[in-house]
Structures are given as structure tokens and as C-alpha cells.
Image 1 (tube, rainbow, N blue to C red):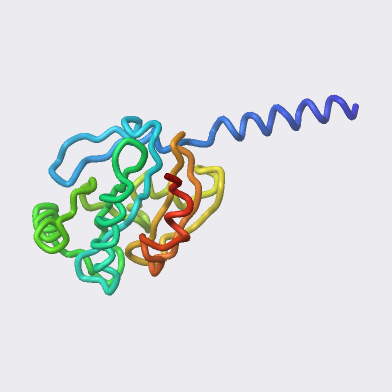
Image 2: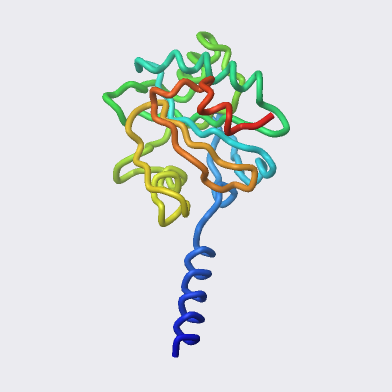
Length: 178
């Protein structure tokens, strides 16, 4: 009887683990409307950030760009998702957001089209990022603009960083490796 219970528990555990998604299960549109398949990022660590142009954390675009220039390339990517979920701090269109990012911060990392990162219209990628049942690691709701989510080179959720955490902090950089 004990062996049967162990087998059933093992099957249930494996079944639950196989239901966990990875970043590679998602697609989105870039800020200029092109389809983007996240499976194209296989082998790279990824930092996903919900952004806004009229937020007290907006200057983090500069640190994100610095991080991207320092670490980006074959092993690391930053993906920005503009969102207007917090006090209307991202009211612009995709074109206006793209112009703002380029003009003010020289953003060269990938920016996606504006989405919702919480609520009834939450984008599926943010449902995955914020629900333990989907990412297999933790449930971490989006608290504000510029919350960061680190994904490993296998597409697995690793960790969330609070909006106030500087992208160039040792806390972030230490997890990126060389």
C-alpha cells in the first residue's frame, strides 16, 4: 500500500511539473507591431520589465539601457512591456512610447506593444509571471511600474525584483553571470 501511494504521488508530482510553462510558450508583438516568439530567446537570460513614461521610476530606462549595453547580446536580453495599469502613467500610443524611449533614453533593447500587466485584461505572459501555478516558482503580483522578472537561459522563471531595485544593482547583476 505504501508503494502504491508513493507511485501515485510521483505521478501527480510529474504531472504538475509538466504543466508548468516556460517563457518559450509565449508570443507577443513588438512595439512596432511585429510578431515576436519568445522561443527565439533560447539560451539567453531575460529580464522582463513593465515600463511607463510618466513614473518616478522612468529614469530606470537609463539603467536598463546601461545594463543592456554591458550584458546584452548572445547571453542576455531585456524585454520592456509598456503598461498603463498604475495611475495612468503610460497614456501614450505605441508610437509615442517608442519615440519617448528613443529620444530620452536611447533604448535599444526590445520593447513590446503596450499591454495590461494586472487585472481582468492581464496579458497571458504576465499571468505566467505572477502565478506560481503557471511559473512553478512563486506568485508575485506586479506592485508598480518597473517591476523586473528574471528568466533563466532555459526559459524558466527565476526571481522578481521590486520596482525600486536599480537594474544595475549587485542584486540583479550577480544573477546574470559573466
